[in-house]
Length: 202
Image (tube, rainbow, N blue to C red; front, side, top):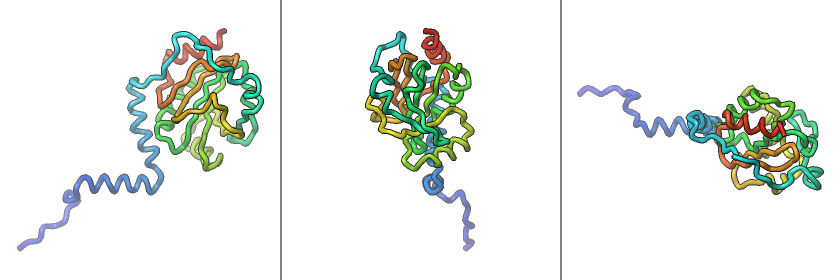
């Protein structure tokens, strides 16, 4: 009786998938792998960011005590009072390196950042990672992103808190919250660029 030689084709598909996912989790690459899959959804355009038809008046997010107390730190450690951004449109995205949907939308945010007037529109990519600024910096450097990244130095004000990340907030130059988007979205759209531009033209 001849013994049949072992072949990799004999391994069940579910075992192969289990090994692949095990390796991804063991190496910490599962977050980016899931993010890449979700990125494919954003590329289709079915998850484009909501753009208000008209400016909705919200809380004065940078006025009064809130603007005075909320402070950020750049990846270089430099302190930045949030209130110092008043006078510019602010695009603030709350994210973390462990959040796949956050990673999925970042390439689109980078393209948006590259295509608008950043002298009049301030980008605040606010990392809520608890692992520290160094981990965030390594991630951003590895990905080659050039948009400004910050970490909170003080508690995040209630106006910017959300039960989900990513969450994106857009503020007018007067500090009024005019748009809020919870969950991942594609921001690299003509409508978004026109909306941001309309806010700078006021």
